[in-house]
Image (cartoon, helix red, strand yellow):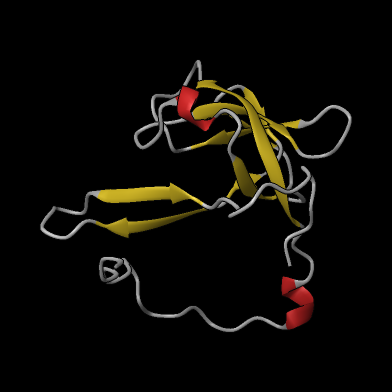
Length: 129
């Protein structure tokens, strides 16, 4: 039996977007090959991904408070593959790992964050639709 879901932090839905706009997102499965603390940021991890491309990619993710880097290695996650790359505190981030979050009941806004992962292994680079 599963525990009842707690209310979302922001239950109000955002405005709808046309399907054509949503279809521009390239959601893919990637396998975490290496994760380590970001050298210049207290809340970030620097993560090397196998995204099905020859060189893979690096992303910076604000999940350090919820994940020990060693426990992430080998985990398959869902990424936004076509997010414009940007420098984050001196490190290049080439995408975004998707995560869900909730405000923990009885706290002053403390959150729990869970990265989105796949139920069964699939090849790195598999399209999410």
